[in-house]
Length: 248
Ligand code: ADP
Ligand code: MG
Image (cartoon, rainbow, N blue to C red; front, top):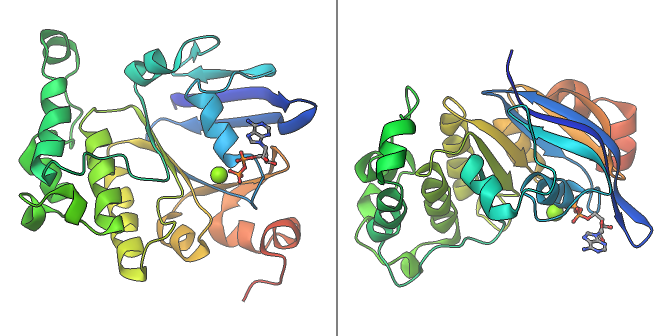
């Protein structure tokens, strides 16, 4: 199986504090991996290192076999790592369709037409994207009028338009209603059919919805354990550090 990401002995030292501590991690191409862990476990720092925002003190990150050491953030993004931040970054004064148009057209240069053939099952037209993110009915509305959850879905659509090989989403359900949480979860599951995705999440209901395969638990900057959601949930170490109580 091809590895999309391999991380070896990763340490990030912030003035003596190890936000990541000798962390080892790998995931297969095409996998949807959910990462959970208590506040301060190092989850966001982990994404910061993968995207090149933070340089590791020690260790290395291999993306599709390539060492990302000292490669600047914008180049890593171009290499095919797309990141969804917690707060949506969409153009509020543009309509939903215009937001998507912008990213789709941006990619329509000769180079991408020649070398960036869409993967099977991947839809990259604006119409296809609108359908994927479930915002066809709101296509002509300014993004400013969307709910928080709809903005999240729009931003995820804008990332997908760029055909990333690896999609990173940091707490996409934060601040969403139950209904929107479910919509965003369904969107991530449908994207997982054609993308490698790391979803970082705090909301356990949401994790149960999207964690069909392996879940990684971070604690104090290291991997505490990995496994299927029901295994992880019943692991006494996880209950102690993460849930702080016995599972229901
Ligand atoms: P999580 O996303 O799991 O809540 P973070 O990766 O944001 O955790 O943070 C991990 C730890 O590293 C926290 O204790 C945080 O305070 C610390 N930290 C994060 N970024 C910095 C920074 N730039 N400088 C110093 N400490 C930081
Ligand atoms: Mg975080």
